[in-house]
Image (cartoon, rainbow, N blue to C red):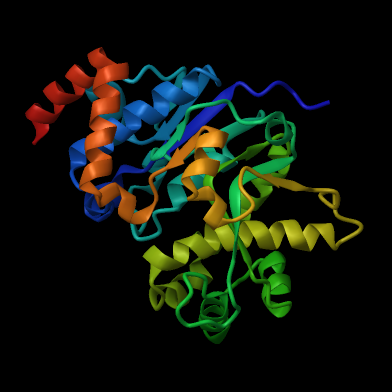
Amino acid sequence: MPQSMTKAVWAFWSKPFQTHRQSTWLSPKDHLLSWILSFERARRHYPETILITDDDGIRLLVDGLGLEFHHVSNELNVLRSQDPDWWVSGKLYAYRSQTQPFVHLDSDVFLWKALPEKMTTAPIFAQNPEYFTFGDPNSWYRPEICTARINANQGWLPEEWQFYVANRGERGISCGILGGNAVDFINYYADKAIQLIESPENQLALSFLDQRVDSVLVEQYFLSACIMYHQNKTDSPYHNIEIQYLFNSPQDAFSTAKATDAGYTHLIAGAKRNRDLMEKLERRVAMDYPDRYQQCLKYWSQIS
């Protein structure tokens, strides 16, 4: 019987943000406001809030913004020497460290409603599937290129990855939210993904890739690979693994009507640099959380 879900988890590895990812926002202040709204909305539904970060992340989000997480870990300090272009590593470490059912949220995701029961009781759940054409050079998903690079340099690939590429798998999984009750499976998947990035035999091959783009392969394509591989392996302990989605497609996820009905907002890609949207974000935080808003302004004036 699935446990009642109470845990909301966020990951913040500060090194990628400091080196390049803050440029995805119109202003660093908007990034701070997004953290406030993501945290405050989610904890209404999932009161056990967990932040997986590093020392700089604690200074920013806890000491600076005053966000009152139930538990804060600086375990991402272990990534201090890692290449920040593999920005997804922080999320993978957060997934791997969980021991109870949870929902992980990106900091640009806002839950206006609790997630539906079909998701919070599922083994795995995520935002939506993403389909692409295998071999399309214009796709964000380029598993054939990554695979060829690693094989050419005598690197290592998990058996799940090899199976999925051999079968020309054409589905990724958008992880704006990711969680579930099959925590052992999520731990397993995240550990294999981390090994793929960190294995010494892969470092030469990975250096030839566009890590900022191919991070989505390691998180989102490989998750789909793990699910498909184990569903097709009758002796696997994860043979019966299933996934539920909040939306059936990216188009549904970005449909205003369907997102409103689901009580879900994800400021993906260019949305974070849209001036009108960022003004709405600021007004919302100022109206709903005036104390947090004032603390943000004060902190922003100190660091800007």
